[in-house]
Length: 163
Image (cartoon, rainbow, N blue to C red; front, side):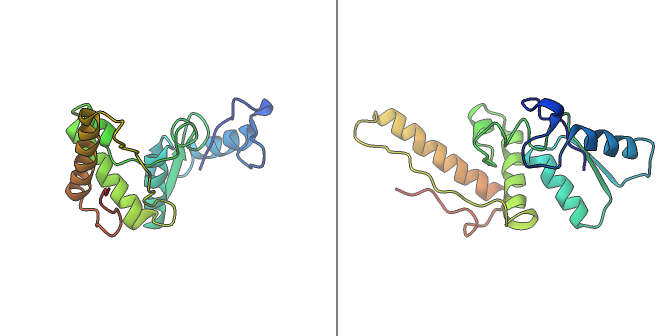
């Protein structure tokens, strides 16, 4: 697996890692024009890394490349959440929302259950929150649970929202 420079660290080496600019250059040179691989994964965010892991676990040879470091533009900069597509649902991108929910289910139940799990969070819908906003929040919770059902992720894997 090739990885890139960490732009925040001189010389491209992140503290405490073996993912260096030199290693990336060597591995990329070995891959380009080298032995054929079964799967080429471009982009190592949560989905790309999951695809690479799944393919390798199935016995396929995999080359995985990214312009930056592993999970550079996704998990590293965000909340480190693998979400189920609710943000896409909110913008009416139904196909992308469903695909995201399916991929989350695959990660949680087959590919990486040791790495991806449900994390509880609290949204304080106190009497100070206007009824319209509280209703919108609950509609979002129900829509997210609908995505879970549509993706066929087990209730035991991803519990229902509750008060």
